[in-house]
Image (tube, rainbow, N blue to C red; front, top):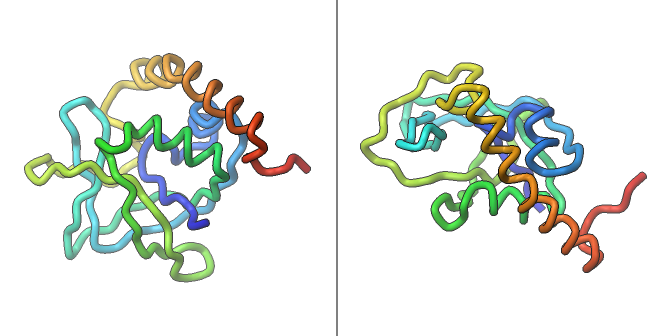
Length: 149
């Protein structure tokens, strides 16, 4: 399965753990030809832009991780798009989440995970916790998660 290219809330290990309910290591990566944009709700999306460059991370997700990430990203509002990123060892095919927003303003490629303040973002993640836990439990019951070392 392809890794996830995360450029927002799933970039940081602490938030990834809070959202996905497990540890998913990540490595730095960049995505050329895209730019980060601001959505009305305070979250970010991507839009193709010839001269753009977005910094993020590559995250190897299992079935539970993808199911939870899809729920957090409100698929189909966001959709998964296949992209070619540059990771630590060269080009890598990955999937990333994009919500169409042709008129959205560009956001600097900085360390912000969203345009929401930290307290509001952490509160949104906390509210999402029961959904993530239910999805993880359902998939563990079905035997779909990765084995623990």
